[in-house]
Length: 87
Image 1 (cartoon, one colour):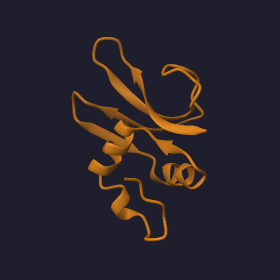
Image 2 (cartoon, helix red, strand yellow):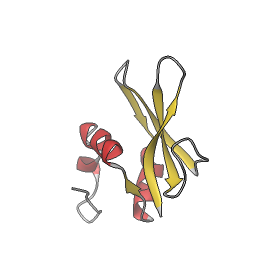
Image 3 (cartoon, one colour):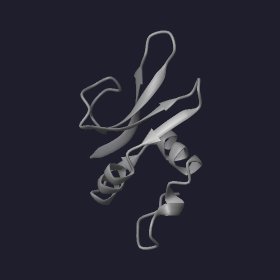
Image 4 (cartoon, one colour):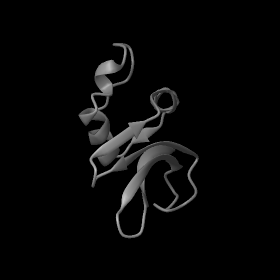
């Protein structure tokens, strides 16, 4: 199973890449795809929307933190009504 989760980068000032990764991999393990980033210090986010939509259609599950970032960016409001919505 594939999940969308955060991968920590940066030594002193942490920022996170949003990656598609196998569930059995550790947090810093090899990712399948990079789909965005999140910088909590500057409060910046970037999402590769077409790639995230593709991965969600194929069955990828976002973690709780990534799901809340997507909700905050109103990502699920842009989905067509027949798309899956996560609680």
